Image (cartoon, rainbow, N blue to C red; front, side, top):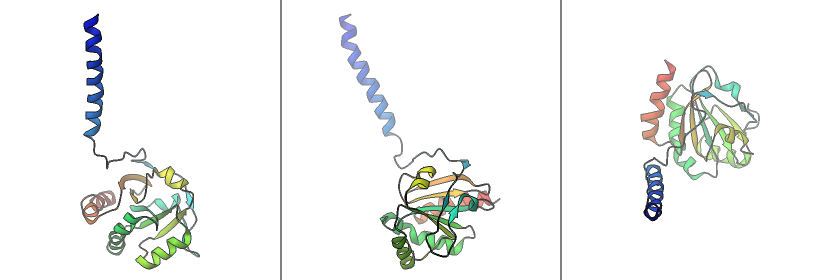
Length: 176
């Protein structure tokens, strides 16, 4: 019995160390999404720009598209913006935006200053739609297929390599 009491803490320590060792081998940039290969959630957002249409789930069918969640207060969003502008200029797949927890006037000024690559932009002032999409933070970008299913999620700013190596090939594959 005394020998078991000596070994028990050692076994417990070994189990805890193994648990943390396995956790440390995972890539912290990979955030799982429960929505991959599932239909986009129901939503209907008002427009950011006065006189234009908002953005709703009904806009997601028919063709492959990108949905980018952004905000004017988001520094990484400014970093990825030139990549999104280039995408909108050179790709025939539409780019839609969800302006996340941002003042309308700030978003409009930001887009006026940097350019507006979006076909439609919805205003998610409360963040409710972002929560339904599983947004951890901005920016996040989703590839949505012709049936309106979320096929890929990119967390963080889209840099040219990610666009070239992951997103564009997936869009081309989904178009077939």
